[in-house]
Length: 479
Image (cartoon, rainbow, N blue to C red):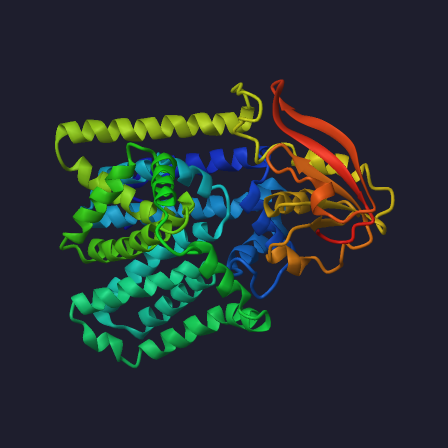
């Protein structure tokens, strides 16, 4: 595929415009819970981390070292990945029959799926896998065609980087094995060329293994509990997970993903068929997980990233009524996404108190500024929060201050590793929010508990959040 050809100009214009729009918006939106958490990875470089492998932090370190750790620098990596991923999706569809219009429609559908407009601006482990899954598929197809050492080595690199991005990348191996079995390419299982691929992949993921050996396999234990942590079927969690996916990926495009999976499984196109095997394994795994515990919508993002475009391609080739439906679904998604971007940038939609779209991303610079105004002696005083979601933003927005921030809870997590000193004996300024409030007197051992200050985070005269500072004198642990 030669992107310099005129037939691709509309596609390139679109994805360039979207990337510029995201770059323009990036510095004006506060970091969310997960975004801030992964920037903290970059600020605390390590071989790996409690909750995820390290690549997201390493990538953040590169970009924030060049562009600084503010919101703009923290988002450039995700925006670049969104741009390149769009090219891969375009190539996937274009290579079917060399129709640029159909490939462009597929990319439009991808960007009309709401959650991708967030994931292509927020650097998360899932975002890294967007960049790796299609090159992995293309590489496996090349191995089937010519079984070259170079392609095996490249596959080892891709799988190693995927493993360095997110633990669920282990699922990538299953569809590759299934594909070779279905194609009856059994010789590919014992070709000597597979050995360097395996060794390279193991070498790349070795930091994760070393870190887990040093930390009693804490990360593996956490992830097994985090993804499927309960015994028995939880139907409420299952239906909540499905509803969240329908809303997150555009209700009108959501069914197209499963139509795309169905058509790809029946396709004689090897690339589409292999993609279908990837999608089938991914969606079965996360469906199983959602039967036990509510699955977050972005967990299954790889499936929808592949099959909303594929489904859109097949719908576009059917009846005129189906094409009208597709155009409506894409237009609806693009308009609503544009409205969301406009709201993030200009903050003009009035919403009731505590119902703001900005409640997770607005006001934390103010909160930490006011919290630090309570600190007169950083040796004997500190700031504290009682939930990890608060901790990620509190630590991120506390950059530049001399005070320490502690997470006070009974949950094992990454913050226990980052907190090198104990909060015991310090006077803590505990931050309570409207959404996360603890009764400090009942949960913490303090010489004295003093409600200290309360203020509202306002936007367009409406309350986004309400913050309460509570002083815990001489903190001595949890009760």
